[in-house]
Image (cartoon, rainbow, N blue to C red; front, side):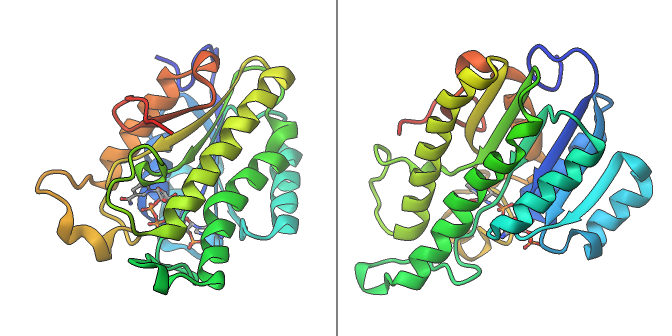
Amino acid sequence: MSLIPELNGRANALVCGASQGIGLALCSALLACDDVARLWAVSRHARSNDALLALAQIHGERLTLIDCDARDEAALAALAAEVGRSCAHLHLVISTLGILHQDGAKAEKSLLQLDLSGLQASFASNAFAPILLLKHLLPLLRKGPTTFAALSARVGSIGDNRLGGWYSYRASKAALNQLLHTASIELKRLNPAATVLALHPGTTDTALSRPFQDNVPAGKLFEPAFAAQCLIGLVGRFGPMDSGGFRAWDGQAIEW
Ligand SMILES: NC(=O)c1ccc[n+]([C@@H]2O[C@H](COP(=O)([O-])OP(=O)(O)OC[C@H]3O[C@@H](n4cnc5c(N)ncnc54)[C@H](OP(=O)(O)O)[C@@H]3O)[C@@H](O)[C@H]2O)c1
């Protein structure tokens, strides 16, 4: 199976949100894959991140580290320009951008805990940053097979919401899903070989989930490396016919 459907040859890939957690595991797994020619690993401090620097030592020029705060649109434009200087087409972009209790976001349990700054922080990182990443990388996604996958979350599903809570996170992931679905319709016209996916990685042992892991049933908490392998399997399996969909780590469609 090729890295993405219909790809003949090796891939140029970019991971935005690469410094830790699932994004870092994705970088390791993609670099271990012969189908990947080059990888751009992006996070706010990628160039000084020990784990990414260790990967760069092993993989040399296959890996380029770029510092970019994806909430800053000028920084996203600069990122796209930098990648575009050495690459005409990206075959795979994975956005792992997302916050739950970091950078001013709050995992609210009740309406009384909701405030404007927390809502804005969640929406900026979870919904606005990934779609503006897609906007700025668009010139690199127009020539043949390409997949833009953003990590969403099952809790962003409105139909699946039975527990409540986590207002900002749930709403910003639901907004992300709508933005991605809308972009998938436009991309169908711009590049029929393009695929846009919203993916739920499963509950995974990272800094994002750590404060909430007590409620996770035994055996249901994934290692980042396992989540990364599942996600790479999904981008290999779902192509243009499935573009605009919302899928879980095991390939099941998730209701909106
Ligand atoms: N872990 C789970 O159980 C779980 C479950 C469902 C969905 N998800 C989703 O999966 C994704 C990855 O989660 P994770 O658990 O791996 O999170 P994580 O460990 O907190 O990693 C998040 C990554 O995003 C980067 N990032 C955050 N804000 C950024 C910004 N403004 N600009 C550039 N990079 C930024 C971080 O790098 P720097 O801070 O170094 O910039 C880091 O590399 C998220 O979208 C999350 O919502 C996770």
